Every structure is written in C-alpha cells, then in structure tokens.
Image (cartoon, rainbow, N blue to C red; front, side):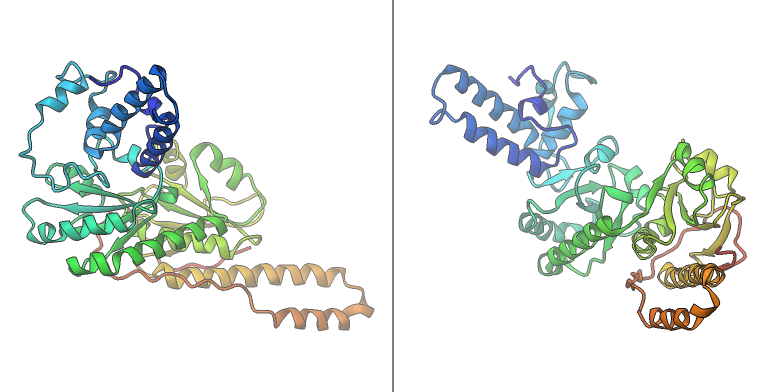
Length: 396
C-alpha cells in the first residue's frame, strides 16, 4: 500500500522535478534516515515511506500513472494501486520500466519539460530503425545521466505531440530547453552515432544555450506589458513575433534572436512575443502580426512608433544572414545620430581634437557573434499575409 501523503512531499521535490532531482533527493533522504544512522521506530517508518514513494516517482512510467490517477484525479480506478495492478506487459512502448527515460504523453508533456533540458526521441513501434536505435538511445541516457534528461514519445499513441513537433520521419530526435521554447534537432544517421557523437552534440548545444541565456538581453513580452515596455518607450525596439512551438521557422530563428539580443546589448531593446498565447493575441492582431510567423518588426525611437516597420521575412532572407546586417545598420544609425549630436556640442577650437578621437574610435572593431546557419528543413505552408521583402529603413 502506498502512503496517504503526496509522494512528492515525502521526497521533498516539486511535481515538475526532473528524474535526476528525484534520484538525488531520494539518496539524500536515505542517508539521513537510514537505520544505521537513526535507530528507532520513527526513523524506520520514515525510511519505509521514502522507499515506497521512490518506488513510484523513481520510475518514469509509474510516476506518469501516479500523476494521472493520483487521489485527486480518479478515472476508472479507486486508487493508484488498482491502476498499477491492472497494467499488462503487452505494451508496444519501447521504454517501459526504464528509470532514465520518461515516456511523455500529451497530458504531462508541458509539466515535465518545464524544467531542465530534455533529449526526446519521437518513434513509432512499427519502425525498424526505431527498434534498432533503442539500445543505443538507452546507452546515451546512461552516459548523460545527471546532465540532460531523456524522454520518448510513441507517436502512434500520442499523435498530438507528433503534429506539434511536425514529425514526418522516424526516429526523430530533439533537444528541448525550457527557456524561450528552445529546440534543436539531432540529425539521425544510424544507431552507432547515438553512442559516439550524440552525447558530445547534446553537451555542446546545452552549453551554448546556457551561454546565450546568460548573455542575451531579449525580453519576453506578453499582452499586458507590450504597450508599456515597447509602444510607451522612447527607445528603439526590435521584436520577433512567433507562432509558438507549432511554428517550425520560429523554432529555427529563436537561437539567432538570442544572439541578436547579445550583440545589441546597450544599443537597442530586443523582445520576443508569442502570438499563440491568449494574452498576447490581441496585441498581435492590433499590430497586424497575428499570422505569417516569424515576424521581425522594428519600432523606431521616439513616442510615435505606429505599427512598426517590417524588417525582413525568414522565407526570403534567412535569419543567419539578415540579423548580422541588422546589427550593422543599427550600430551605424545610432553612431551617426551620436556624431550629429556631438558636432552640435563641440566648440570650434576643439573640432580637430574631436575628429582625431572619432577616427580612433572607428578603428575599434565592434563585437561579433557567429549566427547559426540552420540546415535546410521542409517548410510547411502558412496562411497569412505576404511580406514585400527586406526593409531595413527607418532605424531611427
């Protein structure tokens, strides 16, 4: 019989905790209440409770079932114990019982992937390549234990998640990050590479994301804050309007947008607005940015920003080409504005010295970021208005 108290409370973790955090908490509590260190009936009962809680939460499958059929959500069973006893071993899911690989469903996906970086395999039980890659995927999970969480989606049972990630080939592998809805696709070449190069690719990508999160100045904009922060500001703003995780080109552009935020730190404000969120949809509709994502819009300096200026469209100019140009144009325009103001303030006798200083400043190279070029991926038709092409005018 399982404890009456919530199992997450027993292990002192949140419902959104990763499997690594659950294992770490279990080990810590086990050392604290082990009978050798804490003799007596109270510690023994506490240790029994901890073991029973970990028996469920330490197994991703049992944990998912507990979340679905816990005492606050009974659906056909009187309790979790009855649900567990009703299960058979005839499931076609590949990773049943694997303690390092969480089987994701539509119901628990957002809650699970809210915390930490996840490497997810999308597969189908009938796929021979998926069958052959299973042991290698498990080996990679063991090597990256404690660094990156591993999960799997059976697309036959979870077609909604297959559609959400636009999966059209099996197996497909994605690294997913919680901040800015980051995604990166690992291009599968065979099961042997899952062991040889996947761990290094995953570590490198996760480190890059961590660095970008630390350096970028991109602000997430919702409906309530948009008018105040952007339209009510005197500063120059550049905003990417996205269509959520369903927008494949948006997913490709996010990492480069974070790079833009790092490059323009101190010069311009950079934001990101998700038009799939209910509180942001009215703003997107008002600014004619409710479709045809991603949209890259510049709101000029001053109080009269209007509807903004479309900069370019990702289908015509890839972000890894367009964004460095935006950085150069913004830097050049702001520098020209500064020089114009300085010229009005420099006394006639000091003009020569000013020109000498300005010439020295020109010789200092500006910061440079290598923007990521995404490999070509199939594009899906999007319904919405068309853009007339690149527009880098009206910077100031």
